[in-house]
Image (cartoon, rainbow, N blue to C red; front, top):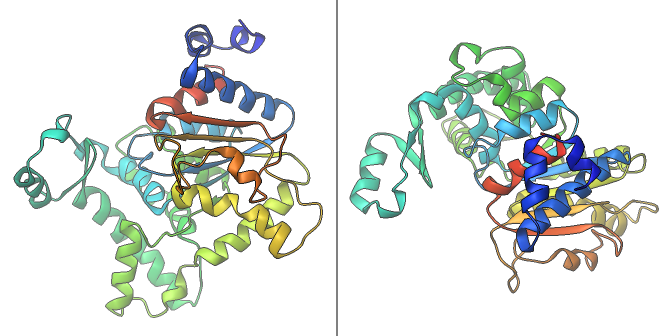
Length: 330
């Protein structure tokens, strides 16, 4: 058993003992390399696709943030808001373990009851979505009337930091990753935010004329500019790794910052990403970004020949907490 596992807790020791081959071995290899990357002075950037917040990834990710194991995050608009939904409406969620067998009529019944289903978990519209809309919309209106502009995550950081949701908390706030991120003002990037419930609500407010300036919320290209500035501040000083959960825009958007800096801006000396791991249930396929093997990224100027690369073809809701536990020495 390695020195890392001996110094770690029972979860670390368990996976060292039992995870020896195939995807299981890749879990250990990726986790050990993550830990080495940090121990050698590196920093880690993380991406969240899918519905990881509704899967309550905050139970382990929040501690990763608090203990400095994550230094920046790119997530979808859904993951940004759904951690907050869970924070204020957890007791109102409805779990449907038999979701595979629901009839269309039963799905319609959930809609009529104002539940929106994500696999086996139904998010309550009123207690989660509308509650947050009412509070964050006041911030949108205030910014709009003052001709101020902010990124989507900054509005949520503000209401969390000012305690405007505290009376609604239904989970231990230590288990909310977005609250941990807000408390540390963690760099956060949310491409395609309009593809989210709050993004839809914001568009509706603009259509109704309640918000005059559609640009009150800053956009994707501006996020890329912010990411480029942040990358050039961090990466030359400390190797920056890339830990990707799922695929899609949450992963593809930020990893492209390196070829943009090197090829489009023709900046010299821009470091490549120094570590790469992807957890995805999208198996290797033809033409799919989510299913692309890591070495394809070498041809796009994102990774180098010597970059440690790992791909774990598995369910991130199972695998990610195990890797986090290993890195946290649980």
